[in-house]
Image: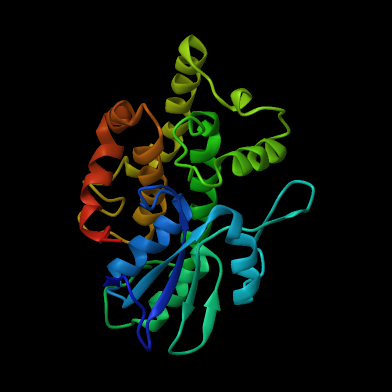
Length: 249
C-alpha cells in the first residue's frame, strides 16, 4: 500500500516527478509501481525532479544500469531502498525479483522461469520505444526545469532544437501507422490467451512490463485512444484490467 510519508521498515520508491500536477508516467517506474501494489508492499513514493536524478542515484549508491551508445552512463529511475534491510536496488527488473523474494506470501510476480521474463522484458523494451518521436509533444515537463531538460534531451538525440523532435500532420500519421505495425510483434504474445492478461485471467510481471509502457502511452501520446483499439483491442483490455494495481500517489 502506498503512502505519502515514510515510516520505519517501509520501501522508499524513487520515481520521476513530472508536472505539475505530479503523476507517474515513465514506463520503468510504472513496472515497479505495479509490482509493489501487486505484492501489497508497504511503500512511499519519493518524487525526484529530472535534473536531480543523477545526484539522487549517486547519493543512494545505485550505480547506473543503462548507458548511451557512446558509453556515457544514463542516470534514470526507478530505484528502491528497503529501509528494513538497508538494501538499494536500481533496476526495474531486479526490483521485481527482489520484491518476489521479500514478499513470498503474496501472489507471485514470476510464475515461470525468471530468465524467460528477463528475455521478454528485453524484447518488449526493444519494441515499444520505436515510436519514440511520438512521445515528445506530450512529455510532461515541469515548467521550472523545462528548458534545461529540453536542451539535455536534444543533446542526447543529437539535434539542435526541440522542434526537431516533434512531428505533425501526414508525417506523424505515417509514423503512427509504422508504430502500429511494430506493436503487432508484441501483440503476438496474446494470440493464444483468453485475456485480458498474457496468461489468461491472472496477472503477473509480464503484464506489468507491457503495462508500464501502456501507462506512458496513455499519459503522453495524443493517439492513445486509437492505440487502445489496435490488434483487436488487446492494449485497451490489458490497460483497463491493470487498473486495480495502479494504486494512488
